Image 1 (cartoon, one colour):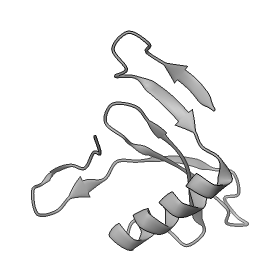
Image 2 (cartoon, one colour; image 1 turned 45 degrees about the horizontal axis):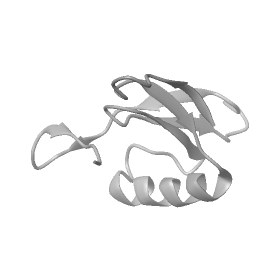
Image 3 (tube, helix red, strand yellow; image 1 turned 120 degrees about the horizontal axis):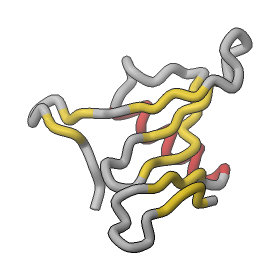
Length: 83
């Protein structure tokens, strides 16, 4: 589901994905960033442009809390993005 999209430049927008994508992306992000993403978090979407991820907590104490995850490539000290 596209929440917002800049249809002219495609630099801004938020996409909330289906469950299959969420499970796959969560597994990938946890393998890349095991110390940053908790086992109780699920990646549910991403922003267009810089590709920040949207996480939702499944923890009993923080259930439903949304976090925006900015991630870096340690070797290059730069933002990780996919084309």
